[in-house]
Amino acid sequence: MKVNNLFNREEFGMFIRFLYFLLSLLACQNIYAAGPACFNYETYEHQGPAAGANNALLNYDHAMIAVRNIAIPVLAPGALQPQISLFDVVAGGPWDHTISPNLGGGLTYQEACMMALERQGIGITVRFQHFASIQAIALGTPLPMVAMGFPGGLVGLTQYLDNALGGGGYRPTVLAVALYRLRNNLPYPNFVALPMGLADTVLIHFHSQIRVSKNVKELSYNSILNIAGYHSIKDIIDAIYNVIGLPPPHSATVLSSDNLQLH
Image (cartoon, rainbow, N blue to C red; front, top):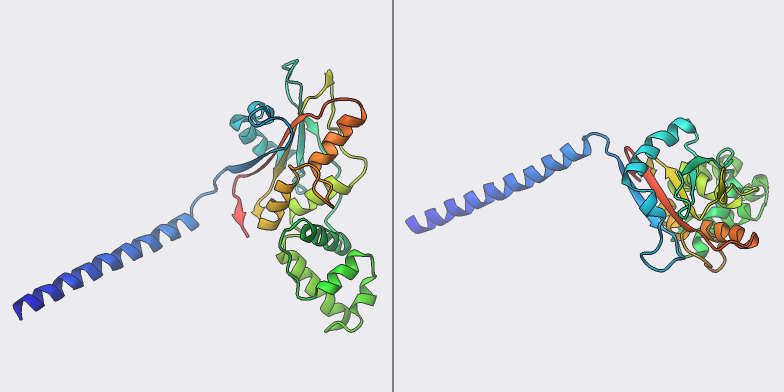
């Protein structure tokens, strides 16, 4: 009996220690969730030069990313447009950070639906309850026609689109807008000309507050050449250089924030 009582006390002590451990983990999680804003960034080296030979991120280093992270929202308040920076490695000149693409306003329903279909085409998982409606709108079918037979009519359709496209990160997420318009708005921004010559390095820096996985995954696809059925930002940059007879540049993309929230 004495041995059994001792064993029970040891078991109880182990249980208390285990419970304390779990409570400590929960406390740490709460402290982390309520913690201060934290500067962070992700980098995407573009396909092209041999592995390790891409100098875009060698010249656009951590210190510069931190400075540009602060500068971009100031340069484009509200819109938080991406900044395109050019550099000539041979000349060793300073970066030109003055190139800002004209992104326009947020995505329309049709543009957001087109973006959803493109993502599905390159293998990014897209799940919509009423996918036929998304397809019809992407093809340019007017909303009132799509709404015929839709539960709740036009009001129900617009509510569904707002929820579905908003939840998927297509509207009104800044990164989705920037990705779509950078690829589709003409004319394309200046990826070539420096004030004192031609660039051989291109860096595109996005500033965003919300990290939506579908947006970030598409951003990574835009570092790759020749994806079937998809014209990436890297494709666009290299095509411009090829047209004027220059070799494709070293290039990369940065996504940064001072308080990047997961979604």
